[in-house]
Length: 152
Length: 339
Image (cartoon, rainbow over all chains, first blue to last red; front, side):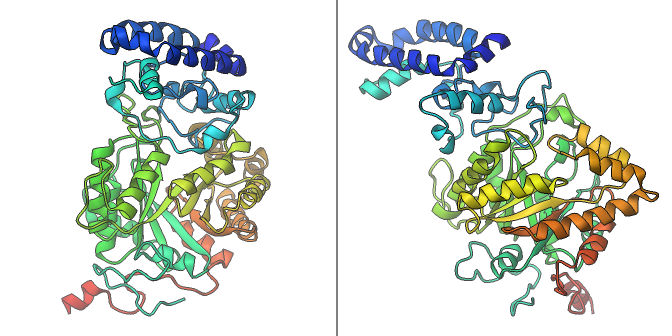
């Protein structure tokens, strides 16, 4: 929902904290998650992730979540799906060239990131192109595998 | 400036030390000359002569010709084909690549093909959305964005491999460019974005139309502060406006074009708007040239390409230099072959 998405960006700092705690909790739960099996957990986790992040961020389930480095604004809402910042077509009032009724995702991201502890530093890194095979998969479980070293 | 080894059409020039391409645009910029590039609108035609006719208009006034890649999301002859035609007779094109229409497989193939046909300069763009063009029902691809495209082109060139890691037998030699729009929000982020493009591999930048010199000045100051002036050559976009109506249309219909009200008013009150537009363009070029860190101008004169020679000549930025063109030094290769 667009209004909630804007709310999330305005509260990027609070959500950053929630996200960090949640991530830590998931990693702490890694042994239990491993016991159940990531393959078995994939579908229900992805469904929950889709519901929660869909509501808060209009998440598109790209499977390679970068919310914490984009001011808690999902870049996949950009009609060009840009992962590296705004294009040159942003209108003078900060709205999108393609969907004038929507604020540019990256203008929002810029404002959100300035409210966050991590700040705009994450903006500087060049994001690799998406791995399209991961679409629809859970970023949360992937994060656990990466941080806790659980085999997939 | 005349280089000792000016082109023989179809033959690559040697790559000088400190250069990454055999192209003339890179040579002119690294030699410290104020460079001029112009945009060629690809024809809606399958006739090669139409491409040559459009290129000839710029003879003697430009160092490189940009071939647009479906600009404004409108269908035209492809940039790779226009560039291949231009290199055949020795022109130095800048091949624009947009991420809108092709995925990474097609783009990497085109980049290799372009290099094989003598293209030495690439301009990596995101591209306009399909909604603004003549086929709004088309599928927007955007598999890559301008930054990941730059990084990919650099990988091909410097590491000699595809993104997949597979090795190339012979890597392409390119001078890599990107676009930037200092005149679109978020303004305070635009210089940093340029830094990001430089970090991803951009060696030159061509900007969107500049009609607002104070904004450009602020942008250039930030660029200097970030220490980018010795990392990228910045060519500022300029163009003659034929009328107040066109200015109004451009700023409301073309994404990213910012034209201050004062400019529109000046054109509206001029007795001869077309002449006034060219005069304004000359003034802008002279003002822009005086800014620290500006390495050249990129002239976009859609549907009035004949104005390019006039404004460049009137601005005096070439300082008597005559950029190479096929018959500059007498007969062309084609004429020699025929005689």
